[in-house]
Image 1 (spheres, rainbow, N blue to C red):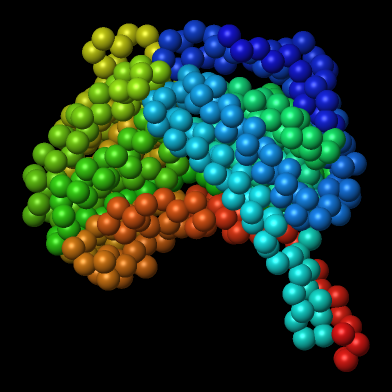
Image 2 (cartoon, rainbow, N blue to C red):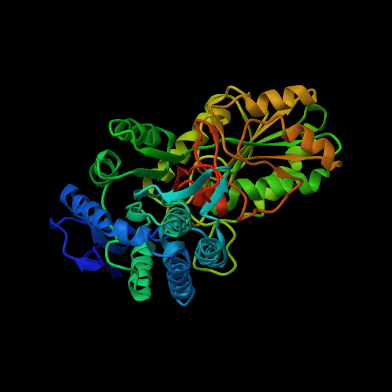
Length: 477
């Protein structure tokens, strides 16, 4: 069991103000796998003060020097790949093979990418008689989720540090151990005191203090739409900048000329990645009415290849959900789908055979789902796919856009240009064309109630920068 008894504030590991602790539960065994401090408001305030004191010095640090620190952090994390992958497989339930590549490989890449970007980014430009500069927004509160814990931390913290901001991080209490490993790597890299601070705890206590504190200049939050609304409400009192990456109900439209086996298999994989605990998961499969039976059979075959198992096994493709609460939530939605009359294609309520311990659910596909059905409208965050049908291309687009959310999506067609034309009509932040691969340099974020702001690459860096223009007399420069 991995136990942390201290918070990281002002460049030191400090005893928290209270004696409370939070147990971290292994998603596959339901055993306690770790323990962290339950930070309080006073701890958050101490971290904010440390970040405020460190800001001027860090903002004035040359970008290339900031880049060197980020590169050292990337190296330190890479050296602990196996430890981090094992922790995250336990915390979240992602199979170890995928956790190694995605949950650790992604963050290592992104710390290195932001090191490179910090060194190369043009923070100043001459515009007529004005010098326009990009300056760090200030002290940033990063409040992060449990589903891709280290990567979502990285996309906020690495980008903010590259921009010259100082940071207070509150990781999810469900998957926090990886954040403490990151803090150790940051300390090892010698980052100046107060530039990065870590306070673990619960959202209504630590998170609300960070979102409302007048000395915090920006909050970057990833999580549920409900919680994002609360963050915005608290932040509005001090008119601080807010970036939100929230829920999704992403649609994959399969056009009539698409390669159906590839499209259906690709959509099921995009739905079931990380046991469906992905905000941009393609959870609505929209197919031509005339080819529903074909799509149904292909989806069942693809889903049944995702056999749930131990996430620590190299052979496992589908692990458990992250928590008991999440298991209950997903089981409730599966039952709701049955009750509302959707066709149960495969899976269904209850635990998979032979897996009585752990937060497992059956990979589930529903067919002939009505566009207004609960399982077609609400984010489930589990391995549950809904198949909907359309009569023509316009109806397919209407169904895809009939959502509070707009985060991800896909279009499949035998013609990339036709797919692109449909993709342009979908109100969402990202659309994959015929299985196009994830691009770590492209902006990620949503429309509508999926939030605002962007992460990844230079778009993520720019979230943490303010513009300043300084005007000179004509001909003086």
